[in-house]
Image (cartoon, rainbow over all chains, first blue to last red; front, side, top):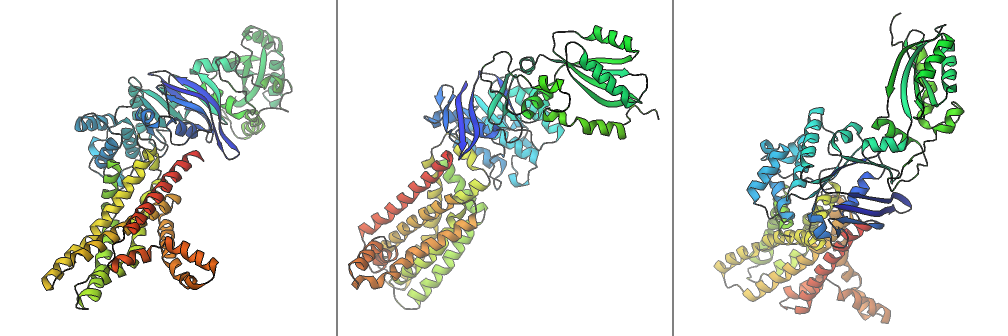
Length: 368
Length: 239
């Protein structure tokens, strides 16, 4: 339905979007994820023909958006980041205008009623847009995109500025729309993307950093596994922490250890990442047995979308991924791991601070 | 084009621009009509049309200032430019909306004509000639104003720049008036400037000459500036 080939946009010298390629099949809901300024909106503006690309191609249903813009645009409903509303008009007047502008052939009254019902704006149709709340404006923007039933919907951060109830409503609506339309949705809110989208593309610094379902991305990005441990040492001091951290690091198959907060007095949590091949639980038990430590908790936790996102967007020099080839990202934790806390990614730099905070004040176990 | 035209017409009235434009236009043209025609005791409307040049020069920027600048500022242009319409449709829709309002304003002269008819004989040829001259002059000015509106995001800037540009076009003729009898170089400048002169072309009509070349000139200017406006929108996409 949508095909993007080597799309590139330069603003002067600045490369805003760098060689993005992907395909969206009919009926798919695709999530565009990326930090602010990653090139999401620029990409969407190119998809909808608002701006042109420096090079590359956008095909909507096989039609090039720059070569035959009218045909291609007729297939797209677009909700930009700021809904293009004429605030002096009434909702009804505005929707009628968009109906005419899109040269819609569907029965006017019935179609507009349908769209309004779908977006739940039937009760404000007579009001002037200027006087509507942000949530209603967003929904009017969405209604506008739905006019003429375009097979492709492109929604740029549709839930920004809405309250939690409205966010859920809009999400449900998008999911519903996804049954009949091909949807591309951008956001920097992770749970949203996860809740709504079949497929996710993570964009970072104008490049596709990952492409696939959340699970696929997790699998491809890393085959590490995470677990959280709570281990009680003999002395209940920070020395325990050091000894335990070092001993854990020395275990076979452990890639990364981080001492977390002090959950109970003198007892710390440890985030451990393994290479995913070796099961360290048994050797861990043995180790603790030998040293006389007690394991108070062992919790396995796989990477969440948030972890993935942070990994991709925080590390610099992320390799570009265009196909779904296996080891997409070789996170540089490997080296950083062995040299402990000297040469690490930004994500880990926060560590000393956090530790200090934990030592000072965060006595979360609370048995003082 | 129809959708944009209708929306702009509506917007002129909801935003109040139309009322300001019409009231000022009617008021001042009324003064010119009274002073130049009624008080002078003549039935020739040419003096009134001659004076109207100045008021058109200052009022048309009010009409065109927000046509494209506001769209860009409020990002509503995203809606227009991603809809299945061409750039010409967008520009012409707005252009003809402004032109329509101008024609509504200008047609007040027919009421003046009725008043005159009650008092004496109206020279209809002169009146119609002047009416169409003013219409095409306005058509050219609106295209200039629309073009300037496409260059900025600020409607006040658009209005002031348009006024200055129209004023400079008007003044340029006066500036080179002496050059007519100067050396070759001066003569060349005089020729160049007076060939694109608005005021003397318009004045020809008020002197009772219906000049087809001037009508074609005004239409050409209107076309040229609408074309430039389309180019501006086009270029914005590519930059």
